[in-house]
Length: 412
Image (cartoon, rainbow, N blue to C red):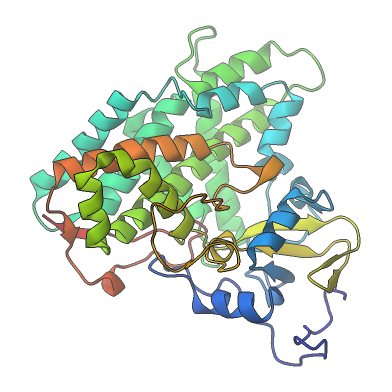
């Protein structure tokens, strides 16, 4: 089937109805019902994207895993100028294939060490201290407070600024531009390009001001290592500043998104809050289940079809765009017993929040470890914490690629 053909019904007959527009929702209080419906009826469905093009949307767990590990479905190709897009055009190849570019330049291991299990720049006692600081600021302002501002965004900005060696004093400037970069269907391509150039130029100036051999964080270490690379595989200054900007924007936005949505998911379940307070040792299991059932993807994980193949009986052609809904896959009842139920004791819990196989997200350890610390501190600091509004009145930012609460109103 070519991109211009009509979608097929479950019996293979042409369907003349207009293609559904994806994404269906950018609210984080529940999985969009259209995703549940498609998974059960048409696990590979034709949709129209924000860019106006067409794509195949995959919603089932096993099929999503298959695509993630199949080299017929590529990611880095999507950074090329003539590739299909689901939102705004990709401005440079290294923005879509940052880890591949880092590997070619011999810098990938430095990033993996910084984001690995130990995370030397982010010791647990420091993360606990800055989490308490943000919550103390919320308490000083009085009830109701906003966990999105004083917990999710505060902790994410503290961690990413310290990790990369960026001044925390610049967090609001950086966060404003990161938010804009990950906003869909609101800004023009020119506005998004100008916004990205502001971020990239800021990073470039930060790297240019470093003292070689005295790194302030991961960004400086990458610049020092790259400066010693005299081969053709080294990164240009522009490529490196683009990649460091990606590390901040994606890391901050994804972490702040998850902490906010996960906080809502906990607060709507008093029994889970009580269980955590009674046994803080179960925090890792609660975080793992929050990773599974928190709806945080405003768009989808894109892949480019490099050779004709079949997906669940649908023929896809070279050049087609495939979108993977990890949120829908994580609620697939074929993979998770009683998938709609919040069950921290779920074992195993092979969710796809961080991808699968060779496409596993390098930031997985950071999110797991720092979320564990942050939620422990949150429950210790406010033993009677609760939502200040019904869960369906929690406001959400519109059109965000990383689903984000506009505020998480709480009282205590």
